[in-house]
Image 1: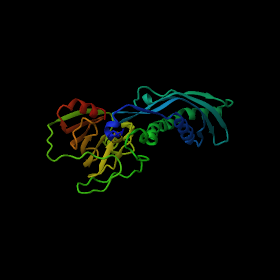
Image 2 (image 1 turned 60 degrees about the horizontal axis):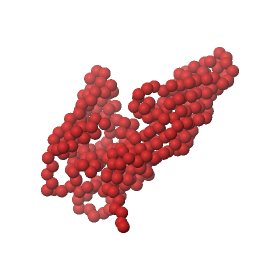
Image 3 (image 1 turned 120 degrees about the vertical axis):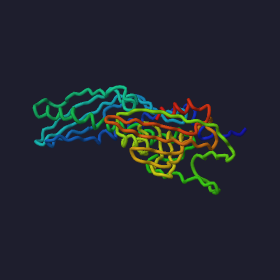
Image 4 (image 1 turned 180 degrees about the vertical axis):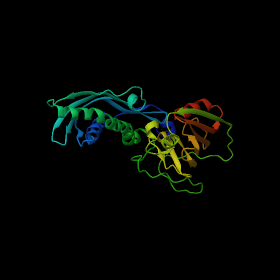
Length: 317
């Protein structure tokens, strides 16, 4: 009895989870001890060691989208040194480092501080420096955690992905209609020149308290896209180059890019319900006001009957 592998997009449509807790503990132990902050008087505070990382960390896949699932308690020891040689040591507990805080912003981080060295006026100054500056440095590291998690393990649960990493991976060569050479990676569906698709236009608007330039960067910068998509991405952010979002779940080619103003690109959903070889045209327009930016996503060429599904996809941006 022979077994036929599922197509790339079909296989990735199902639930799959990978437990990566040991890797996560090593990540926190390695990355947090690189943190060091400095006061205006030259005093320095750093993370000395990570004592505990308690919790579960998983990477999940659903409908071609990678989802980080984690909730950890982190306990670390910090140390400080003033210019006069005074030294302070302490302990810091962060009860929850989770997807809900880091990516969804549903609540703020909680920091539980304690001083383990004898108290004095000099030590108190170092203690205040730690409480003032370490949280910002820690939160920058926490923001990098889900990106590194997807980078390290996304390829293991996306069927058809043979790439060792996202960062530094070469973009796939443009498809050639006359070439018979094998191209590594997922095979794109061939379009039928005689195929006619009844289609419509789906438009979604959203307003963000961010600049148009920053939003443009978030949508096109290969290193920043995983911050909101929670999945590997390929994006050179240049006209006539191919891109991939959601680990290959959405693909297309950039037509034109005007920073802070507009992005035009072809767009195709790698789904069993999306017509073979069909490409829609997505225009993303940015309209900045005093304290916010309105973003309008206009997708022309949505197959009839898929409007609601595609609207949900665009709203997921």
